[in-house]
Image (tube, rainbow, N blue to C red; front, side, top):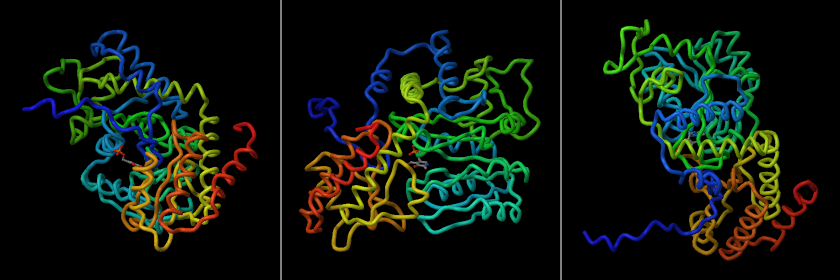
Length: 414
Ligand SMILES: Cc1ncc(COP(=O)(O)O)c(C=O)c1O
């Protein structure tokens, strides 16, 4: 093999303003380049314990079982679903975008009896509508998405925990795209399980999924406890119920690995853990509320700029996530041509869409490390110039001035 034809990794500089991934915070990248430790080195287990404490802060919870799943956000989702759903369990999924459909698919793979309610993309559910469906379906679990990046909508969750408890239902939410950019009060809202990912508001690269689990859901998982034969001792008790149908995603085993017994499971992804540790430190240093306010400020500046450009925004704005905006591609404009020019001539990436929105809507993110004024200003300037270039007439400069006005009004950030 001619090795000289493979150059050193040196990706082109990009400003990632799509729905995620976004540029990682340099502090996270630096942490990830630290030297490795052995898995049972007290320095390593101490970092694992610190990660648990830090992510309790990020998830706004006292849940002892708050830890990392090695794998992308989908790994966190799959670990929770495969570990909590028993074949034949009835689950209810309110679907308002692609990621609701993903929950249905994973639940079906776990042999759940899946029931759905749906609203058109661009809308969310009222708590009453969900309660009505719970009464009808009588599920064991309610599986929700908080922020569905495919539609940019944020499902209100604050009343669902109380409803679920009244009906004896376990509540899970996928907060991959919303955590740290939008309010999520895990304990106060009574959510039993939450999973997330690093590559959105958490300022890191994908590959790690932080999760948190209530005692109520851990009790259910423990009923299916299994200890790998090669490491089992006479003292280990297996659970009363059938084992979880995945080894890698068996949360019972993963809890035993992160817990005081440190029962060996996988080899922890040390570099990813270092990155997640630093990301949580960044978020908590800024303060959860301040971070959410920052996402709101820059999200609104982008919204004002886009509207001033004469573009239409997708979906019910009242329920928009702070960190992603759906923008209708104007008549006569080829969406991919604009994205291509943005990338090639400005080094800026904006997102396309999936399913029914494909070719109709761009998605523009302002999140994590890129929820910053300069990123918003650069993106608006470039988009306006590109649209003008492809023949869509805007009032030149209006977008930038509208965003500027917004920042000036929120003077703390000027
Ligand atoms: C809401 C939501 N859930 C799940 C995922 C899947 O995440 P990953 O690609 O990290 O597995 C995404 C990715 O964009 C997402 O936005």
